[in-house]
Length: 215
Image (cartoon, rainbow, N blue to C red; front, side, top):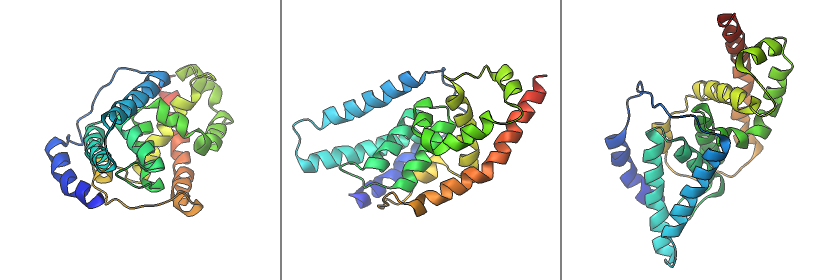
């Protein structure tokens, strides 16, 4: 099935690729709204498989994988989150791949999907603590109105942005990556931890510059 997907995905994505310099504006959405959209999309796809045989279900998910890749490349952050979920758990058409799952999750987070950022809470926890314990946190709180309810989404988006940049994560490249199985293990997560350590000085500098520009 992976070969069948790869035969079709290149042409589909190239026909719908958006210029790297073109930005897509979206209205602000809450974490709950992003989560609901994620669940609704999963339900819509599952509904298509009702009363279908295993081969038909596999074909449906193969086509939906291509569809969601197309959406993700076009800037759809819910599609990016859904692809991360599929690669974490697998589906009838694709096997689990923790590396691709994490990359899609960071990409969605960098684009402001707060539901994706929440999924990264455990991974980013010590980075959040580092920012909260910084010497500039009071000034930053005054600039960004940071509270217990929003600090993860605010800090997480910035951290994800820098990790995406550090690892050169790109939606089109991810969508065209050859499918393979990679189960969760410490070694596979190591490069993301190393990236987080590399980008934290840049994150701190970003926030310090933000404070300066608002004085």
